[in-house]
Image 1 (cartoon, rainbow over the protein chains, first blue to last red):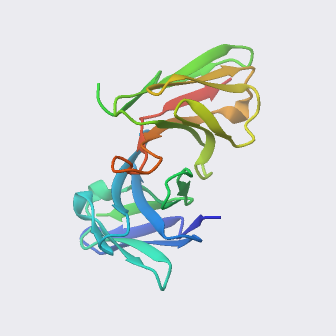
Image 2 (image 1 turned 90 degrees about the horizontal axis):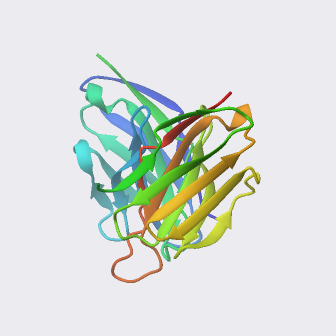
Length: 114
Length: 117
């Protein structure tokens, strides 16, 4: 069975600092991996996805993530945090067949301090 | 309208009421989902419909009743709810099943904030 672990339920960074949100997955087959962002009282918005092509994936709003099979990780990074990045971030995994729904992590709340 | 829409955005109901949540996707997808998001809890998958057929029901109480009349519309009928059912209910859609058009990522609506009094 697939699973996702997000390390740290809350991460706080200063404006302009590096953002690093951690995600480790477990899957018996090559996975598809996703990062979503949720702003208050809104639905989830897709930031980026890994679908077995390039291991370094670039997404919207300056975010990127690197798929590392040896570490079973898919950490999300952004070189310089902006106040508008404050939100909840979710990592999710699906199997290659796409026949199972996404399995989501518990989420990481990112706070950006001025 | 584009993407996934949900109505109403906010709903307050008593425990004896009957109400329905509506979701509509304008993306031509073939799968739709209901999720429950409570404060301080992870996203809970409730129901999955693939090609209008329910394929997953994650032990959801019978006071929640889904309906998928076609691949674009999904309803969640609510009756005799409990205060602990207060949450944000999210609808999502995706294109699954393999093939060139399948993308697997889910597109979410803005959610319905439900309060049960």
